[in-house]
Length: 197
Ligand SMILES: [Zn+2]
Ligand SMILES: [Zn+2]
Image 1 (spheres, rainbow, N blue to C red):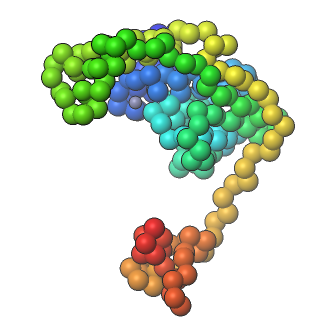
Image 2 (cartoon, protein in one colour):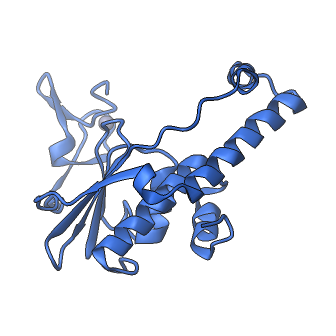
């Protein structure tokens, strides 16, 4: 697998750069499509539940056609590299958990990363950080799938589609807000930002 694969290029174009996270999402999406026997979800046949909002999710959106806008991409903020796919037509579920551990960094790489995180943008620091990222990305693209993921087929139903609810007007800012997202403050129904998060 390489960064010249057209579907990886499409994901990179959408995402804006290439990175190890995007490569993970690419491998996850490829595994899901193959295991569930589908090409790309043009309708809402496939549902993806993602447990993080990292770079990986952009590749998953491009390759699988599961998107926030269509409602077949669901984000659960668990901070886990776990992706579950549901094929509506067959009732199958596929859970992909990332197992892979990147090889340990050299002290030199670690020092460069620490400097970079602290805001150092000296050319040699940036070059080291970018070389490390590029190498990690190639590793993700080329590591055998069995070392990257644990793939299981749980007996699970897809999350039910979001109901369309009535909108109210927030009693502080006056903007429209879905009824189920209003918060009662005193005797007023407010949107979440007006209620103070
Ligand atoms: Zn990225
Ligand atoms: Zn408001």
